[in-house]
Length: 210
Image (cartoon, helix red, strand yellow):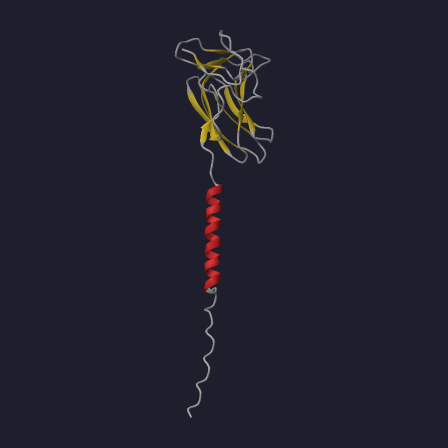
């Protein structure tokens, strides 16, 4: 009789290669993880969070000191601050923001000393200024902290210096389009011109100034 053939040695996997079953499972898990990451990463749209940033409508929204007035020139809207020894003629507006997000403040200003900036309760603080007497653009970025949901955007002049003008303010970053009346806890709108400012209501329309 012919001697039985010796048994073949068991085939070994190449070094580092997973068994087929484990490989399929690993690929499936990776695909699921990618799908979950894609579904959860739905960034908010970038919007302008400032209301009445062109100073051409009511409710006014901006909270301004008494020595800030609105331009009376038709179709040319801006505000003018007249600093004194006791006041830098400041205006401000609170905006709703998202934590851990970056925002850009952009303005058009004129005057020997015009300051613009952003501040927050968690230590957010970014500002810039211009000393030019002609219209020019300023821009500064700020990043919110992990718990920040609100910031204050402001502009002002400098004590006992000449008047300054601001024509445009925008604050762009991730968030939701603000209500025409502003946030419920925003300060009451303050008129800076001769026209009276309507009080904010739960639903309102913006009234544009010629």
